[in-house]
Amino acid sequence: MSERSGMGDVEYTYTRGMDDEAVARRLADAETGVLALAAGDDAYAIPVAFHRDDDRVYFRLAIHAGSEKAAYLESTARAALVVYDTEPPDDSWSIVLRGPISPAERDLDDAAINALFTPLRVFDEAIEAVEPTIYELAVETVTGRTT
Image 1 (cartoon, rainbow, N blue to C red):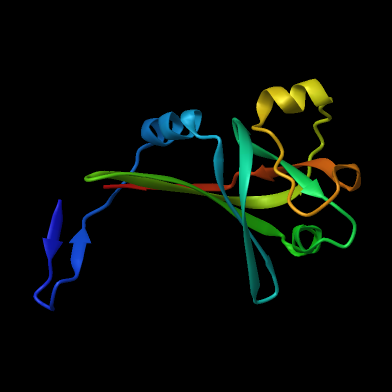
Image 2: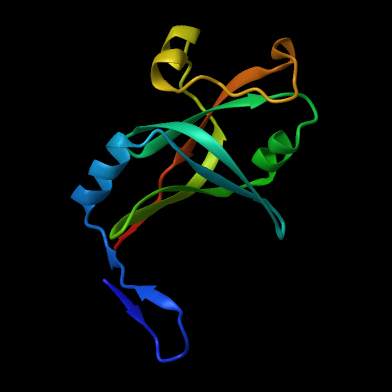
C-alpha cells in the first residue's frame, strides 16, 4: 500500500517483518545477493552467488593475488549478505543475514562447486590466475522485510 506524504510528491510504502517461514521460502529460491564487507570505516560490496545450508551461507569467490576483494575478506570480522527482489507493483522484499565470514572448512570438489553455484564470473583476470575459493558466513542474525 503506497501513500503520499503531506510534503510534496514523495511516495511511501509500508513494510512489515517476515516470519521464519517466509524468510526460508524466499531464501530457498534465491541464488544471488550482495555481500558487504568492511575494512575499518571503508565499505566494499560485491554481487555474489551463494548456497545456504541451515545456519551457514557459502560463497564461491574468484580470488587472485593482491585483489581488493581478498583484502576486504581478510579484514572483515562480520559480513552482511543482502538478498532481495522487487516485483512491482506491491511485492518487494529483502533479507539481511549477518555473521562472521571466513574461508570454508567444507572442502568441495569442482563437480560439487558447479552443482551448488551459478557459473563463476571472471572479469579482467586470466582464468588461469583466478582461484575459486569457498567462503562461509556463519549466520548469527537474519532480518526480513516485505511490502
